[in-house]
Image (cartoon, rainbow, N blue to C red; front, side):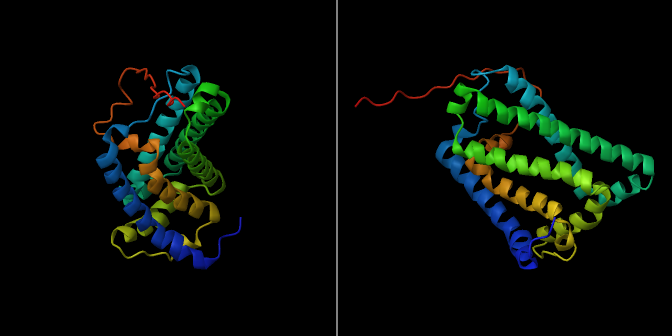
Length: 232
């Protein structure tokens, strides 16, 4: 794929990260101040449970493992490169990351199909939900494609992307290396910023609930309540 023109790089890779973080912080604070009880995933399990299980379980476990891998690579890039110095170990790491990425993708497909085909579930799916699903599809698909088309990502992420992300934390964006990355890599990074910025306006805000017992608590059935329409 052809890269975007270079004059988009400062905007998308240098300015957008800060805009998304500011929107995330201000949006979550305002949402909590105005309606703290909306910090929920707004479960539709009561409306349909079978696909709900087979979509949410692989999606959540897949994305959590992949995110954990990103965080580890960001925190200890040198140790990661040491691990990858042995071919067998880097191969195992790459295959594991791809498997969990595919697991996440399969779960996301089931979730979206459930929303499209289940009439009751579709009725409680908002426009913000569809925006979230679109962003998640781009994020997951681009991540899987990066793993397939640009292998050994665990190594070049530690060498090229981690210094760029750390430069953002120092408020001195260094775009020299990341701007030369392939289109899919930059798409994956930019779409992550869009996801972060959209969190306060979506059901993704439930990830901010601490403690977060979603992974180990017993299944809960949530009943929806919708106020009756006013009589004409």
